[in-house]
Amino acid sequence: MESVLALGGLVLLRDSVEWEGRSLLKALVKKSALWLIYHDLFRDPLSWSRTGEALPGGPLGALQAMCRRTDPGPFTIALDSLSWLLLHLPCTAVCQALCALSHQHSRPGGSCPAEPVRVLGLLHEELHGPGPLGALSSLAQTEVTLSGALGQASAHILSRRPRQRPAHQTQWFSILPDFSLDLQGGPPLESQPHPDPHTPPVDPTARVTFNLHLSKKEKEAKDSLTLPFQFSSEKQQALLRPRPGQATSHIFYEPDAYDDLDQEDPDDDLDV
Image 1 (cartoon, rainbow, N blue to C red):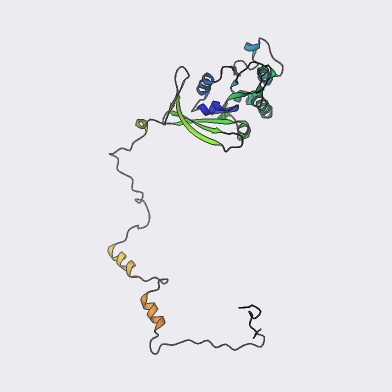
Image 2 (cartoon, rainbow, N blue to C red):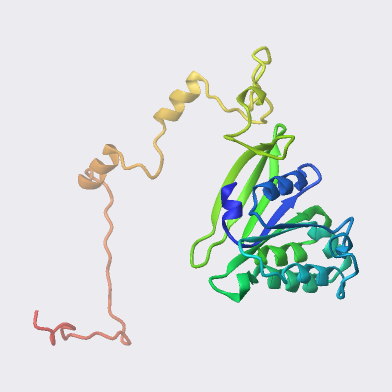
């Protein structure tokens, strides 16, 4: 999971009804840099609790106001969630705002070098069509898709670095009550299903409509049969040594008046 927070830009957390991602978002918030702003778009879309007044520009204006700071150090914005923005605002406006946020850099006192801004965005992908999902995916530097098996959660991490091939990684994990990440190697072996030794194995050839096996006589007949394309010794002897009285064939050719017969050697001009 360290690779999720290693890059700046937009980190897209894609969850589903079966595998929720809010707990992972809070766990990443805990592991984030010292400077963090958590924006709960469901309860406080206009950031009233933080500023005490409504900011112009609506929810997108509130997001843009978060980056107007001069404090040193890394800067992380956690959005809970991007689905709220997509359900209330045009997808193009949301993408433009996220692109502006993820490409901003916090400069302490206006000096350089700049610290990249990291945006953690939770996305409930089952609420949206392929268009918004594809647009957000193209903006994200890191995508985390949540899934799992046998009650064990896993995260498929796709990282995009400049001038490098995308890197794929699958991490199994669980989240402790204090929102700490417990990384694991995979689902526990004891929870994986095992075949019942008392259940007889299923024969896949039990219901076929043709015979898959040959009897002894059928095998002998099959082995003694000479196929047309097989060049046996008998055929070879018959071709090399014709028997007495066997009819032979001859080809007679009489040139036609319109045949183009060239007596010259076609390779006469070549020094061979």
